[in-house]
Length: 466
View 1 (cartoon, rainbow, N blue to C red):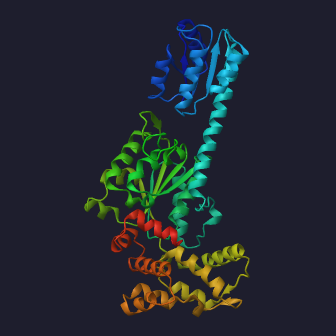
View 2 (view 1 turned 90 degrees about the vertical axis):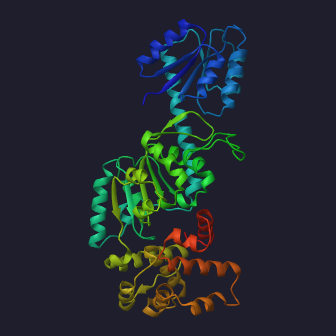
View 3 (view 1 turned 120 degrees about the horizontal axis):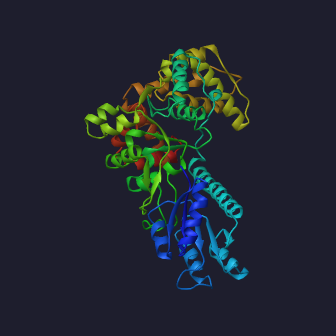
């Protein structure tokens, strides 16, 4: 898309000259002749740079009108570079304009080389500033989330995983939407990051968002951003996930948890490829690739009127199921060894090996928590194992299966009624047992506990179960 420049000058000859020079350089031009017209257009249209006269008809020499307009534009917090122009150039006017928020100063009559150089420089600096803002917000959002972006981070010795990765390699060359399905803990987020890392968009951002963790009241703000003052707590402007992922990939995890009322808004953005930040009437372009994931049966959700059919078809240009860990037992030894080595490095502890009996036992286990459960198990065993080799007993697989496979009220009560447990420990154990009972289904688990989606995810985060 061509860069758009707003010219504000009351002299039509100046506007015509600038249009001639700038249009020839590939810029789109929006021209106005009054300060108020400039402000009105900035509230409804997106521009990349402003060329601003310092003197309008009310005042032809002091530059006061231009300074006031620079201040008014700066107050909008649009972060658009302003270059001011005047035929009455003085150092005082230049300093005052820069203090008000202008980025550069051009004297009339200008030299085309100087004008174009100033414009190119400010556009380049604005691009860097925008990138820095995106990275800053991404770092705030993603510091606790690791998304390896290389094939080396994915262990896939089984035929089912090799076939899946081969398909993803082919799909990465396209821009089509991908829907990843499968149980919780199977590695869907890692695979989404991998697709991004081998796609044409890899130089841009990969932005994951847990749809179940966003309160419905903040959905639009989180996804599309907001401007300062848009609502009570909007003390500063903030970019949303779509803008963070511009030209990159947006990963919608826990897709089925998008509130039904908000699904139409998401569909509109995907179809129109544009959106407005909350509190703004200015449309922004949405050039993003969508990868989504869910452990829910979306077709059943559609029948139950909890998920829109049109949104489902928009997101699943192709739908791929990620196999559960029990369906890829060939990968278990390598995965377990990988986690042991990773945690031993993290905690600076000696790395034990797995006995053949332990490996066999793990391959026979049904893994209701999939790879996430295996990771947690290896982390625990690293601290509980007192030998160089881990045997079957130290894995405690039997007890874990009993919790999942049997609805044994006596065992549950005995565990939760331990008089040495704190309230937090009781709540954590209850969450784990209920999550296992519902085989990792977040929606059913939250419903059975009487929790809202956001309340459920807050507790998962609190106990590091997410």
